[in-house]
Image (cartoon, rainbow, N blue to C red):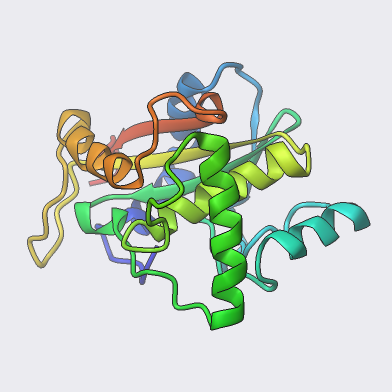
Length: 222
């Protein structure tokens, strides 16, 4: 997420939900998961000001840490919009409130880091059944590197994790940028991303990738 808006934008809505309506947000998330374990939040949480970076919150063994450093440039610059625990599993969140947020600049990594990232993404594409020539470091790079983190945790490190895309509906930005008003208007935007990444509807981690749609206007939230 970028700079927090006031009454608009995914960061603002995420924090407002966590502050004013935490049980309601948890209910939306639990409805998308295969189990109903309680959710314990690391972020957004009271007293925690910065988004979690990379996978620094995971208690890696020495062996797993070496695997992670070999897989992805360290330190990485990935920030998570939300991180929580649900039972024994990690929940990693990416939040969006408008169409342009789903796109991102391509990676600005240095040549050595880019080689490492490309190798990692190629490994993930192979696992997901995506053609090797598909570009994953372009405008949907952020989406792709979230999938890479999910892959590393579950497949390489054997640490159970789920990736939750939290899509807010009904936002209004001061600059008038397009904001999907419901799940139905989010769907073609998401489908466009999946199509460009050539991501199959069903892949090796599709059962650990979830979509949650939450309205920005809830009781007491304006």
